[in-house]
Image (cartoon, rainbow over all chains, first blue to last red):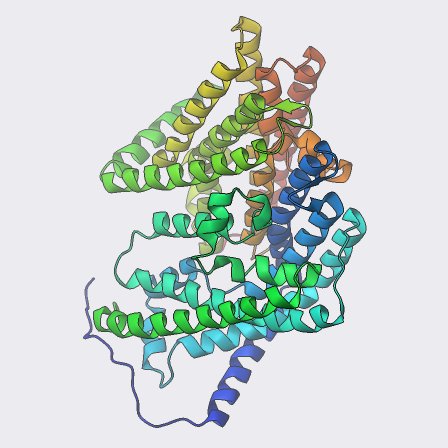
Length: 284
Length: 262
């Protein structure tokens, strides 16, 4: 730590209009698309890396279902297949900057440059990850079809559920995006973040429906899940397209998503203010 | 044969001397490993709450599979993977040239340089889980069982070393190999469960492409008395072939490597 600069304050040189913001999102999004389409092989491998996780769960739970006479927790083996194949699509959409990425960005001093820009660093991130969905969906398609043929899933959505799915999918992304950002902000206070990240992802695994549909989890886990944001990023959108949710369960779910987005956004704003005050950049 | 072991001992000593300076890292690793072990056990328990038999494996036997998985992750994570990352980094940064000028065998050198000692926490945890599983299975100890388990464990580790090195060698030709390594690490997660439960196409891949079957399921089979002498012999032959192929491809890769620092 040879040179320690003075804390950098976010600048507020001029007010930006909606047009400028939209333009900025579009640029960040286009950058994501161009960047990712350059590396098809690497991206296909990344896709396998993401897909192997639900395939393992799918195999385990459908063999458990089969050994128990065909169904557990109201899911048959074919419905488990449907659940986990939709899972893979939801996963593409709820991908957001991981806390490790945030850690890297602070450690390498990248954040210093980002702070000098006249926009909040959250916004280009948001644009980038929204644009990222386009190549991700393109790379996902062949894999999704392959999984569909291999595991012969059963899903029964009606028209409104199909129409609502893209909406809850985007809301799921926003919930996860804000909470991942929040977790990343911890790096402003400490370098030793690995154990904390591990705890966060363990909680997400158990209480989001990422591991297994929440109905299959023990009752204590379902109760805990109700107090956490995780189920709105996996379980809820999956269940919508699976056709297992009726309108009386759907609307409260959307409201919960909106509430968690509002909560996450407020927390990010509050903690960001404290965080930049602590920030000292290293290097030039 | 002894020389690589001696080199390994030397480098391990340096790594340990380096790492014990940062004792806080040990406690962080304990915390992290316990968290991931706890999560794994909760998952196993959810499965147990529905069935006591998965693909012919009882609860205690599944726990043994998980124990071998944790043990093997610790071994690979402390002894093999850090070396592979360092090697790929060296190729990219042009530092491999310095290794090549040393009078020792280059494959040995790049394979034994780093020991991430704190990851050995997972080895200990794996042994504890295995101990509990063995207690629950009511296993009768025998020399054959102990020998078969130790032999399959070592061969499994060698096989994983081979495929990981093969993947790393690709960095002689390609720039972005880390996605491949990440992919292989996530495929290794399939080893939490006995490979017999997977559909055929996946099981074949997990046996020959990325030998999760040999690394985790076969040692667990040895421990639960399912291993036949034929399978043991087959594993031995497969390990020898893999070592030979890896060696040849290493030489081939080196001939293609043109250096980057000059």
